[in-house]
Image 1 (cartoon, rainbow, N blue to C red):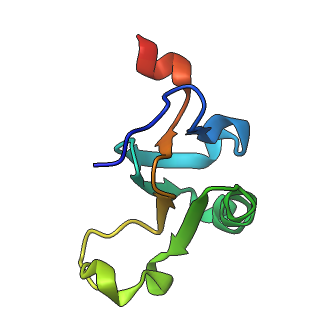
Image 2: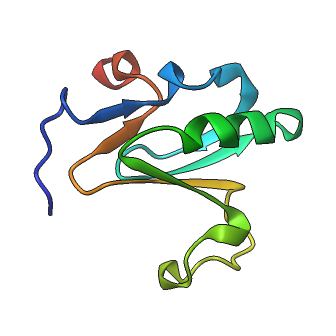
Length: 96
């Protein structure tokens, strides 16, 4: 596994998007599944696409090497951090 410097390599989603635009978020760590509201999908996708040290994949863009691209329960957006980085909704949420 890759070591992370917790406070130096964290991507806090609430710094880039309005969390009220999100219906559901699953997990935190190097891979996060995200369900934006239908009306805000494009806005959320565009904002997260600008975040450094993270890749944003729409369901149809997920690389074949992930092997779950065609699953029934795959989220509309999959966020994948660069090695050593951690994705979370907000740090204060993780500290409680």
